[in-house]
Image (cartoon, rainbow over all chains, first blue to last red):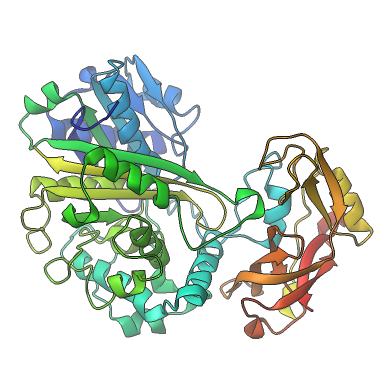
Length: 389
Length: 131
């Protein structure tokens, strides 16, 4: 069964906070839910499907349904790290197409800054029962040094340069200057990226995303409901999801699960990369963007460096405008999980509601892609292709 | 020589991999190989990730390998090099490159195993040093 046209994104919301000293985690989820429902012109009582992931407190979906007082007939707590919410949109569409719910609410929230979490630079221990921990945790794997190993290998194998990676941050900063909510609004140059301190070779500080509190929410509905609402409806055209891992030790860090999720989404949508006017690409690090764009077919494998260089990702300048809100590199990376805000900016572009300085003309097809977990070990990839009615 | 100065957390014990850590205390690097499909895998499991068979057995590896990728974590209090090393037996494993000039590590470099002690008298873990 194809999902094309079976569900619409009716409401989106990006929580305005970037540091939530005065709000609880559950409160941030609920405030985000209110925002997206208000955007859609729907109410809490309309929600009959709820989606959340590992950032939700307590028993996740149960705790948040209790807090928000939701009456549900469908629940899905698929957890693939920061890509969860992109997958949730597809799963919501599946549930709607199967008649399991009419109005699906997806929420994300977190307060890593308020809690003083060492987000990308401390090894994460997922507990002794995780089968990989004994064979990885002693060696100090952090988020940043694992992604750095992917960058190092890509450079070795394909000649990708730090300057090419820096262009990704430059493009994000050029967009973020127009976003009053962005954490970092200063435009940076390639030289400034290269002059910033190395965190883990070959990644500099400015190759890394920001750490922010906040959250967001998405409302997905069946077509009849979306078309009766006041906001411009955004149609789901295609979706793909994939998991890539260490493959029993046959490790190849030069590609991601987007190699599989991308073609699945394009096939369902019936479009090609050439048809896509705007892309939201998960940008935990600059290298994440470069490898993902190759995997999605926007450049041949190994040629991503040429694609992203020289301003080619800058709206109004280059051929492939990306992350026009400033993305995770400059704007917002709530809860260390950037998938949801990727969908939000793609919806803004399709509605024609992005900032005028970065709005893509005639934006009729947009793509959002999430990567959750680590490029270096195991991650979930999710691709969504959306269009205007 | 910074790579060995930091404290290494002990790997948590599991009945599934006890034999690996017992061998590590003897300075031996074991790799799991499946007798059904013939593939060696990493990290070691009871059930083969390639064919699903439970006919996996421990075999002693040569300890020789090459660097697949690496990154020196400069921001750590004591910088260290995380790496993926491809063993002569086939699988690629996460590890550290130690006892060397961290700036001289290169992809493709030949390395050999060197077990390093862990906290609280935990079993030593397999790190690698230039061969």
